[in-house]
Image 1 (cartoon, rainbow, N blue to C red):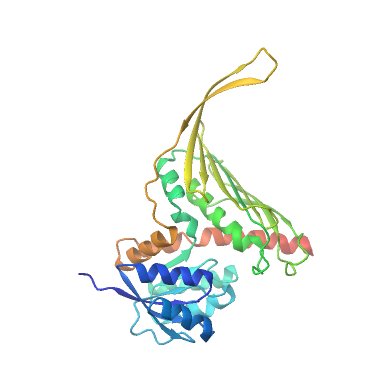
Image 2: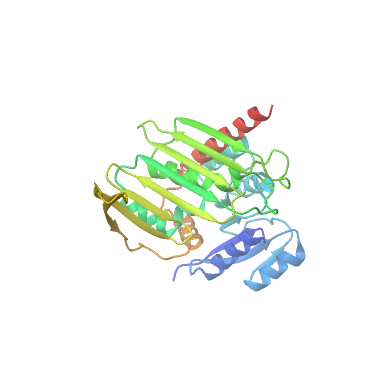
Amino acid sequence: MAVKRRIALVGAGNMGTNHARVIAQSDRADLAYLIDPREDVGRQVADRFGAIWLPELPNLADVDAVVVAAATEAHFDLAMRVLSQDRPLLIEKPVADSLLRTQEILDEADRRDLPLMCGLLERYNPAVLTARSLLEQPLHVMATRHSPYAPRIRTGVAWDLLVHDVDLAINIIGSNPTSVDAALGFFHPDSAPMAEDVAETVLGFENGAIAHVSASRVGQRKIRQLSVYEVDRLIEIDLLRRDVTIYRHVSENSVDDGRGYRQQTVIEIPELITSQEPLTTQFSRFMNVIDGSVDAAAERATIVASHEVIDQVISKKLAALK
């Protein structure tokens, strides 16, 4: 039987608790340490999942890898400390609080040739995995990620929401965008200064493909919808329900009774290729990267493009506010 990897987890918030559960349930890993400066919160999560609570990152000599689910502003220092000890790292998005710091982390991982993954979780949504296995020539992507207002989230929607669908669009089209256009809205009276509530972004690609990505936290219901258009197909992905529907238009006829038109469409509902929780799939891939069955350099190379787009969106925000 293979030896389990010893994992240190930083962060005992909502996301950290979910990571703790997934690691503890894995047959390939043991949750060795739960690190959080808040003893009451950190110790409770550690005890729940059989880990040792620590207030700060320890020497990692007896740890095989680290998962960071701490606040974004702490990512840079934590990541550099983990990499300096030559340990693989799975870090929640964004990698750091600026593109410059993100690139510095990626460069350090490249220099040491260390496994580094970013928690762009929608990549592992069963509906996304299924749809991507069916795509042929995507030409137009439309993504909508709208939510009711959440006062606890202090960052704007670009880093909180938009980055997920920007990453999906880039992976679906299969190349990095050559143009980025964005419009931002600042609406909610409780939002932090310069924290955008709405972001509308259009990406252009070298092959002519277009992606329109919409993020909002002033919606009145949660929407996670992705539509991928090909010349003769529409693939609709509901990221919340985790289902895929494919539409092929056959014909339409005018109706003489004045009630509009009659349309014929073939609808396919493919079976999902997996029903596994995205966080579990992501952690399994992290284990595969560590084991060498997934190329670490290739995995690292998938991270920066979405961060570069969001950096351009933020730059447009700063320019608009001057």
